[in-house]
Image (cartoon, rainbow, N blue to C red; front, top):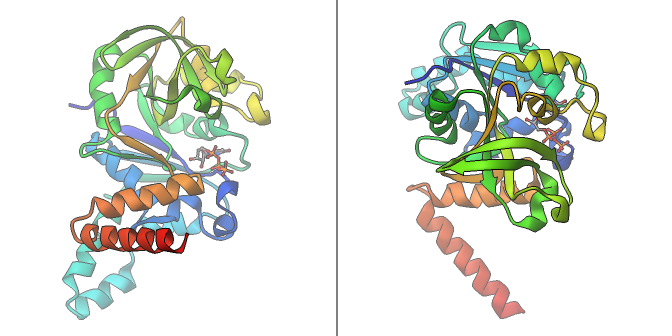
Length: 295
Ligand code: UTP
């Protein structure tokens, strides 16, 4: 099905909203139930047919890089002890030979700058970008839905979701020209608009399918909001030439870069797990009853 083989995972951000944990743990290694955030993003990419994984990493992210490496000593010990279930649990963190490339972003100059690092590895085919701190709960994944839709419309495609008007200032927002089903054609993008100035309530979240023409835009880009090279600014410049669509994906998105979103995701994923759900829900209910009685 796929015509998208490569995906870029920008993982060089500082994760300041998650300090002090991110002082020594990469944000992408924070575990949602029992898997790090990056595993969810890689799994979603695999479901969409991605075969080449490009991490744009940074100094201090060694744990993230080790995670997808072979843990020879650990595997030997587990084998020797006959711990097959534990061995099987490692399977998703294995990468086929040559499938993973790790680049370094020398300084955190923004998402646009992070994506630009992958220029020489992408070639001339469209590619995906996944931000691992946006976790999307859906059986087949949001990216697989986008790959399917992109094969019909081409151009740059961004994942979008409907948000309350009051929240638009936290997102890039689509200026919508027309909508057919889940696809909206954009007149442009506005980064973090004031609610009263927002052109729509279609907010951009961290999944993109981009044409390689984006790199020429990124090369020529000056600093945008927050003094950073903004990916949305580069995409915005291609509205007339390449075409930009928003894809209103099916699934529930959690902003795991924020403490609130991460805690909610933890509850949602625990409740979705057959082996944890009942005990966890009972615990929450008992807890809530205690609090109500104490109030
Ligand atoms: P965020 O806006 O969440 O920034 O980046 P951040 O630094 O990770 O987190 P806070 O805001 O300080 O808490 C969105 C995505 O872009 C990547 C991040 O790793 C994340 O996946 N990113 C951001 C980079 O790779 N490099 C950058 O310079 C900036």
